[in-house]
Length: 376
Image (cartoon, rainbow, N blue to C red; front, side, top):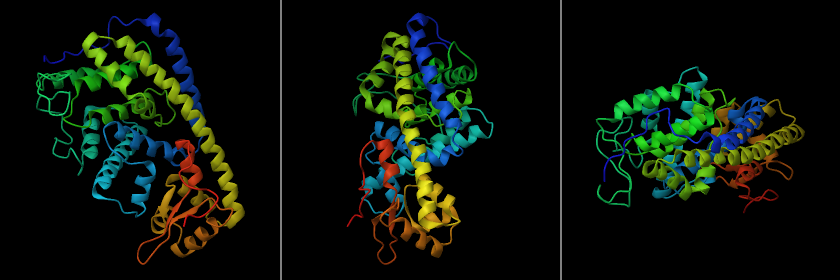
């Protein structure tokens, strides 16, 4: 199969008339979501569940099998088998890359090819794919198709390695410039990156991570916390087909339409989720104050929102609350009207693991843990 020759950016031949309604709807919905984020004092803490969920879902598209709860439980000291631990490690790497990239932009830096190399190195650190040139653009030809297929049997063959640096430079220039609409440009940035397929592994995750970073860099988000992997995972077959239609048929308009619909749907989902989180935050603040009457109320509140499954030692280190003081506060917060449950009783050197089920249940839309009684 012949290698793919990327279309020049900015694109020609886009059917703008077919996009205008969706462009308006997507921009309005994203502006509403960004405005809601702007009213949150510390979105990184309060909206931690969205970040955790994105790391899990973006990795799930690539084949990992672990949940938000399992990731948090493992960090809190829960034991899993080697296969599950490997999946969790991949998710934690992705979360680390997400956090680093967000801090990079908040410090006033821009999205660069060097940043992508740094993020890729983190993503493949000590996990499946660690031997596939982490932190380097590929120097070998790769292709996409059924497992074990030859190049002739491939469904897609990206540009040859010798041409890749030039295409990436042009992509970087396009990313820094302006096009007819920022959201449509985000769609093009993501798709062109996937079609260039510049890494031997990890292209999908890096490409999805680029979406909120790009929108934040273009000042369309007040905080870089808008993730599309929930929608893309739910519509995975169409996601891949729309990308394939670009290389096979040059159907950029169909891809941009799909992307804009994703923005609308995901923004609506996030608006509902964030409003529920904000309401729970205020409710829990009052609950903690009423139960503990402690000077550490704010630290307790932020600590359980930042990491809704935890052990006491980790919580003490993150919040600065003395361990002995914390033990007494946790006992109070796991009583009848408290927001916490004991997920696993401590035994010997193994610490107790606590959970904040109401927060975990919000963005999952289901009851992960009982909220009215302690588990046995």
